[in-house]
Image 1 (spheres, rainbow, N blue to C red):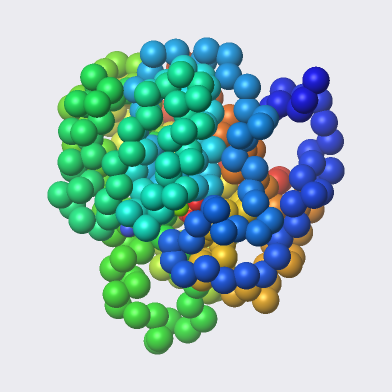
Image 2 (tube, rainbow, N blue to C red):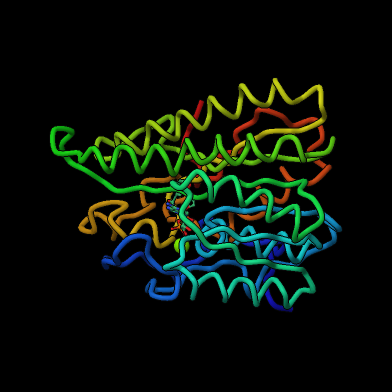
Length: 298
Ligand code: NAD
Ligand code: MG
């Protein structure tokens, strides 16, 4: 039998065949050009009906963690709307085909989340295309390293805050009136929220904001039966990391300092999103689920 996410295996030895390699892609980067290729669960994620009939909107859905989440959601029985940047069409179309391959409806809606009208329109499109929305995954993110705050461009500060934080507010505001009791909002935060790198001041700030947003909103929406949670990845092999997410002279050691001693793959994140989306996590709210190779977090 081929391996799936339930196969008993040594997590320290897993993915020894996918080692990080320095390279450079222009932002936003493509999974199609990542070498070696990341595991999005294409061959390994096995659905068991955990999200049957559900309707999901996922941002940053073309590649990395968002794409692995779309594949998992589709195989668990959900229909999905995918948000991503127009430059990422190639990656997005591949994920749409994989999702459709499991019988799901998958709808591609490209656009720039810094554009408030696009962010709002996304929710209306989801409701129109899927007949409603009961899972919202705010996962899109911008990460560009900078060594020295006095040279951090104002445009970058604005773009990072808009992509990672403002868009999350705009989409969530628009979505909440449509969300039924039982719905789930899941935000992608980061180990950077607690353990910020000196070269990621703007990015780490947004991830701490996402944690606070998650915990505050979870309390506000709990009486309405809407659960809000976050997933905090550690070092994961995605295009974000090779499109100025960090200096490439460090990439050979990417993930080595985690207790497991390796970087993670997007496929290892997807089950966390499935758990938080599904009714099996009915008593889990305002939680940050760390998926980070064992790094200690508060
Ligand atoms: P990724 O590059 O595959 O995904 C990020 C996505 O964000 C892009 O695919 C793009 O579609 C989207 N995006 C960026 N700017 C956008 C904009 N202006 N408009 C619309 N979409 C935009 O990388 P990933 O690592 O899978 O990132 C997903 C999330 O995981 C991000 O929030 C990131 O901060 C977070 N994260 C990643 C890591 C890691 O090590 N890779 C660690 C912690 C947290
Ligand atoms: Mg992408």
